[in-house]
Length: 260
Image (cartoon, rainbow, N blue to C red; front, side, top):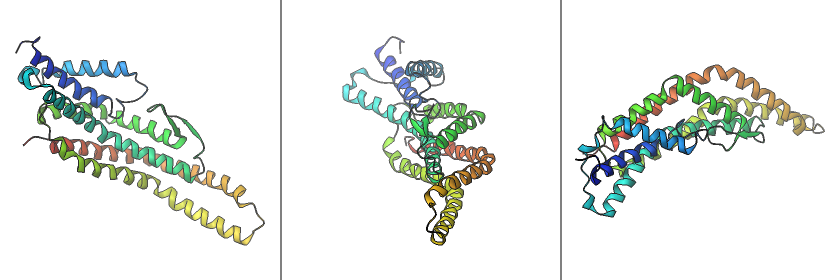
């Protein structure tokens, strides 16, 4: 197969499609702090470096197959790359959910700031969790593991041969893990602040003339900060365990869409 032949160019383009789809959806790689041009350039560079590992000349794509076949092959590679990226994105979304729930419980739901990962308004606790999660993700080599998973996907799932339709139920299963993360991290705050609310309700019954709303706000805020201070040392360990589970999900996704 000649380098400038149509079938070689099509095969090379499919490799680039899978890589770029992953970089536009995967955690850290899809950060809004990186311009789109940088992501595309990095995807192109990674695709070039992957050519010796997945030589495009060994992937036969007949240019006479028709527009429908080629379009279907491109869509399959888009879904494979996006699926690999969304597996990790769901874990970060769970941390975002936990931060929002905690902010709501400790009366910080009204305080928001721009998240550097998404360039969208986010609560203070969510932003703290996201920044800490990125640091833990990089410290355990999450970016390298993701790139290794990408290479493994080419070795296990050849171009245009992925059984992507089998990934639907599995993605729904992973989506439930989002709520598990949110509840696990928020559980101490929910329990303690429920007891605080119960105590304030009893106090309001004993002294009806007291302005309980004025009293409750600083108390819940102070208790929330104390809990956050006590929980903070254990967050890196919890995040690392969640990322380990995420990498297991990534491997399961690759094996699931493997052609028979």
